[in-house]
Image 1 (cartoon, one colour):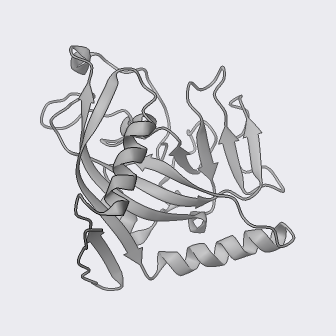
Image 2 (tube, helix red, strand yellow):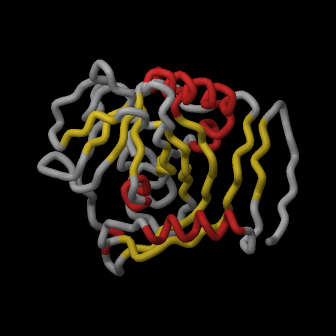
Length: 225
């Protein structure tokens, strides 16, 4: 396995992984194997950073333990999920902050994640926003940023309708399944400590030829995967 170097600054280390590293290959495979949008043909993975954060990790562990206690000592369900954001570097260092989330999100003021990399790809420049240099939502030239996060889901409230505006009582997360409201599933948490950003990815996206100039379907809500 190829080795990487670590440099800690103020308790945070973004550890750049070489392309031969097992974790780099894991990220690359996960990105490509979860493309659900037909217009996306692939990615060019430029850099992968493993995030080491001595502040957000203990907070995540404590929250996971709290959820486990609430579940009677059961193991807490965790998943590696995608989150696209132009502020990915800031989130890697400081964690998520639902204070910046908008109440106009489809499932309320929470942090949104996706199973499909191609869904989160739509948020890498912002909420279905275009790149600044080319004013192109589907730019295949500009570098995007995405996170793979470890998310403690706990007891999930599952729905296929946009009828939830916050976390229902007795649950730890919301899973919105594909249906009339959504083409692709997404997950929502309402407690910042329930997520640990694990990998930061810098990449470009390849589109079906001619698709780059098409306008995407609209979407609402900040912090949405």
